[in-house]
Length: 107
Length: 405
Ligand SMILES: Cc1cc2nc3c(=O)[nH]c(=O)nc-3n(C[C@H](O)[C@H](O)[C@H](O)COP(=O)(O)OP(=O)(O)OC[C@H]3O[C@@H](n4cnc5c(N)ncnc54)[C@H](O)[C@@H]3O)c2cc1C
Ligand code: FES
Image 1 (tube, each protein chain N blue to C red):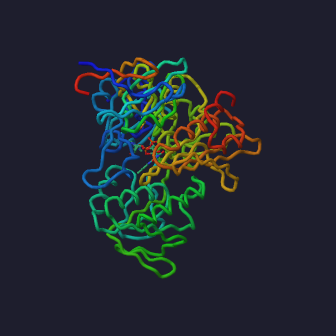
Image 2 (spheres, helix red, strand yellow):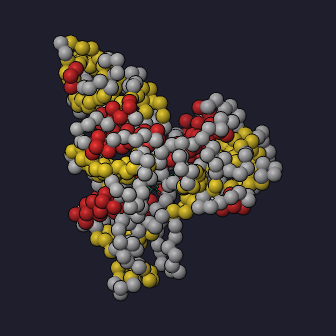
Image 3 (tube, each protein chain N blue to C red):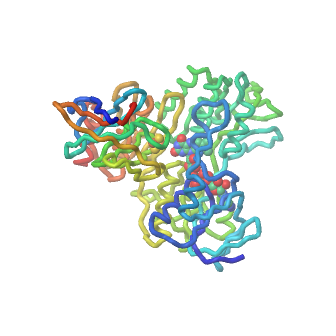
């Protein structure tokens, strides 16, 4: 059953930036886009499992801090070598200034 | 055996593999042949000197066989190209096959430099998977390894071996580590970290002889080790290009489009010598990202794009929990502007006489310097003249410079 998890306050993330969110042993990355929307993907790069929250957000792209793989954080799509495996994405919603992310089942 | 003409890539390393996939991504639907001398499917070299030892050396493949198959790229392993006949546009392989090409890419990389010393003693090097497996088989916990050369690969290997309880001595002919590629201050900090981890350094050490497993230095001292590894740099693999009559000068000479003097032949990655963006000065890089970027770039130009290669050099290194990242080429002797963004990270920037940012080097715990180095890289690429005071001010948001720069 899906459930909504409280991840952070909207103010915790600057515009066009990303933060890391750890939950139940899993790592997520939560983004605030230049047009002030919130997105959530897996937090570790699909290349070498590095935390993406240390990377640079440019428009709709997150770049991995280690070897600069690029993902579209809205869709999770891998956009440039060395990766070709996409990131999983999670739905988000805002309630009372908090960012909630939707996780499936036992997570 | 003959076949239709298509794209032929000599060398199945990082660069050759990326170029092959990039040809498909650019819409090319003809035959692509990638010919590689090594037996392994193309793999990443950087992990060979990093991380924890013990157990099998990690083989990080660039693409799975299924990915090669679904892109319809023909990959021939254990296949050395022995001759290029430019008049007929064919390459000859060691197994007797010949292949016709429309366009040919040299992605032959580099090989580990051998010690300029007449010795029959076994001296290992670290360039390939087999090299790494050989080192791992001898460098077991409690053993002693002598590494000749305090360059990036020597230092990374030292960190990897220390994590596996191997005793390490590094013997370096000059007075400092890492030569010109890294600002002296950051190099010194890395050396200090290695010392804290128990690595012994012998600087200004000239080797006079190696007999069996003992290294003798000019000052009379001697070191005996279970394994001696020469990590003294790499030399571009240019024999085939020379034989084909192409210009070779510290690498295969290419122009801004990565084409050689023969318009049907390109060269990219560690094997090529290309004009630096902006200055035009010839340069050869040995860096993973350059191999990827140039492979991708050459692929587009093999299909007729004739775009100029303008990427800023960038590399990283990992030693213990420290990450080093360098964008641009640090200039020995030029002053640095320093930024201390916290958590023990240091960033050093350099400018040219016109106030343009030319290099940015960062050292710190994993992840701590990546964003700022990436921003600096973009500023360098644009020829931007950011205000040094803003770079030095740890509170300033460098991303804003991208909007104005
Ligand atoms: C141990 C190690 C660690 C590294 N770590 C880093 C790092 O942390 N950061 C970084 O930026 N860079 C690093 N590098 C450098 C990076 O790996 C290289 O820049 C990159 O591999 C270059 O790719 P390439 O395809 O140009 O050449 P290569 O990887 O050398 O591949 C060339 C291939 O061509 C084959 N070949 C050559 N001649 C022929 C022929 N005639 N016929 C058929 N095949 C042929 C060779 O066998 C080889 O497999 C490291 C390198 C090593 C060895
Ligand atoms: S770990 Fe992300 S690109 Fe390598």
